[in-house]
Image (cartoon, helix red, strand yellow):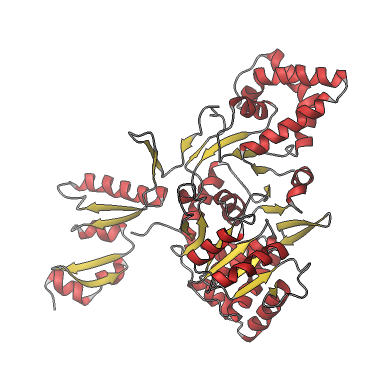
Length: 507
């Protein structure tokens, strides 16, 4: 009984779905030379198709790995989908890593193709080629400073090759996307390597799509969200928030012009969904405190008074808990005079959901943001679990907790204090119906179906009650004295003459 996956979704199929359903809606924005450029879902789908065909024209095949190196750039995100469309595996690397670290990952992942952002990354990858015998193809996005470089190919040239290939083989791209399966590896993310060499964690389409769907449902995300994509693409958090959930929900990702303009771009975009490690929230608050020290006496008094009001009742108001009429009125005044303008300066005036993770956040810092009306929450996770293990539900925020386990994930604290996490993907049931009456069998059948549908867990059922097997299974393997004699859907197996002969003695 395979776990249900509506439509057998992969990321390229999700892109195709969005292009068909909301083709004219914005999918990606990037700030370039101070101006925000926008690509719709239909345009992104066309770019990905051309990229995939270009890579195919260059010899990229199913099972190969594509290194992706650079800041958050639309074409780098699209390159992930292009590689996945061909059955390949994107391998994002940290853009600020020195060449020796590049060499280790490029060799470990057996990289033959690399897509990089600019001259800085080209230089590091070219330097590494002498130590990475598999690396043969390097493509770059930003052409500045690369006019006289040899052995590297521009994105424009790759797109041109792709469009020519697509015209010559018009059915190729769709056929490759159709070959993709949810259980195929969709991404290889390398851990930080704090206890040794970084290790590549392979995650499937289904794993990340399931994690994304769970988060989208948990926080009621819609296609109307805006998110600022500024964290390293090689980090699991960015891959969940800026890629997997983007593809599942169909919202808009916004790539800042550079690391130096992130705060300016944050204010301009005004994201509705935001993620940042605690240090970012701490730096923002520090900037506010410094600016208040240079403000007038009246502004300093208003800030001190109304932040005191916010500390007293702001979190409770945000969570919908009862607050006195006086405090509620004072908070409303403070929202007009202090909290609202402050959220606007921070670029958080439109935020519905904000998350922090990656390190412990101080309770005072956490309380401050929630007190001024920012719905900041914590999550706990790891690369191996597709980022999220625990999430904080709205209205159930505790400053000393990271929330409840995500549905389908089990968490235990080991005897040595380690956090043990399990996400069962396969459940083996051996003769579960043995000794049961009809009513008990019906209850057990409903339980099995609930586990399968609600937790996405594959059920391997060993059972001699053919009525139950045929009723609840969608794939059956028939054994006769230990030898497989048939396999297929219940209807196929039921009509198989070999099965009929073996089990009914007919023929």
